[in-house]
Length: 204
Image (spheres, rainbow, N blue to C red):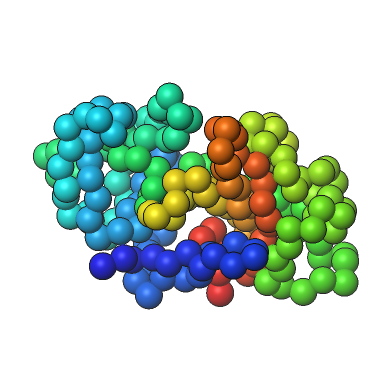
């Protein structure tokens, strides 16, 4: 049974789960499975040995992450007595704190005649909000501009999609950015942006 459903249309926008996902710990890097069962691998390699395990409905420590030869992320975890690697699909990763950069973006957005929740993949309006040409930007360049996201996640059935969410300080507002990968594009590029009320990954 899936714990989470990411609605995919022209614009990508996360939808709250029917399950109550607890708040992540304030410090450190933590993973939360959006699936009730996942395969945990001996190495960060799909050709390595693995076993299917039931995932807890709680955050688990993910102290390290690596990328494989195809630039997909793997998270080092320990579930009960089992240690190994989880691929990025179906994982919500708590990475950093709230984002001052997202706060500046929201302040500009708030001065514009726009409503929340706001979703767009139009280059002109998104560039006005972010003050740089975000649509089509690579993951590497985006991270240079935006810094560490509050959360990162990929849906279970699509490793080529990533959502980076940045919580706004002192406000219940999140700026999220959806990236997709296409053939030969191992870094990924920005497909759309969303600004909504609610914590990262949990719009109200």
